[in-house]
Length: 461
Image (cartoon, rainbow, N blue to C red):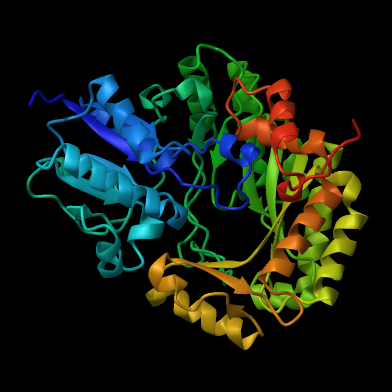
């Protein structure tokens, strides 16, 4: 059997979108920048590498794509990244197909949010995997290609190199990523990074240089990079330095990032807008004081909401579009939801869109059970008590006021209250839709979709 010398990375796809299954959701592309970081590291060491995303194609299609490129079969192990528990079924089917096609090829599986919580549990779900990597792969990735892999869990600071998007199969369809920092450590009960300390942001000059290099990879075309940071918390001085670096390089790049509503000061927004910040995903989660305390978002809800108001108003003043993330939480009642709705209504003119969904417990019983115990004490209960063991995804009845179906109805209603067809398209097309996916394509998909599943209000024809 002829084998290539390409190290193949596969980002596991999903059999269905993780929120609501409709044609628009299936258009979304999520660049697996963690897998791309590993592929880039190996490429810098002299290896030929390739990253293929499963997206919403079947595992069979992914195998066919790899064979068609000539990269598979390879003389190196097959590297599979599972970005979320929603991709686990796809990964299982893909690994089974890969083993059938090439029984002698070792399969290395990573994805710290899925592999890390309980390796023993995951082995029962992925029997075809030869090696499971629990932590971040950067410190050990080259050893994973050898017969004696180093499987220690080592720290991996934010890479200082620029991701090479040319290694992504069909890269031109994806909006690029630039890593700004890792970690958060803010102790929010529901967050997977609650105990991972926040790292210092990359140097602004280095970050601007990375954006310039990424634009070169896209041959100077318009790009909207996502500055990846679980909690983007720049100081005013850092932001002003980034603005100066961007201006010095002559960049005209509009970018997006995410942060907590209390992690960025209004004073930084003006400089960040000058540096190209155009869209920001704000983790408001709730505006109910009791739910803020329940989530562990803050010990002082009034201060939390004041800071949120100040930041959102600063974004409006400087032309930064705000997409607010809202989480319907354990113990949710009509009163707590009304508190959040009223707060959003008050700030509606400064909000471009709202993403709403009920809280879900991710992980096998080892990690899900402590969360579920806390939520049950607040009046919630699992829809299926066996789902943590079966899938790693536990959907909740939030309270006696909101069972799972009622919570979904409330989520859609709140989303539609603040987003129409145009605002939804503008936010999604900025970062998540294929770069060649235009409004005409979008309108065609809207016409073919079930309106009951869409999280935005349809505009009059």
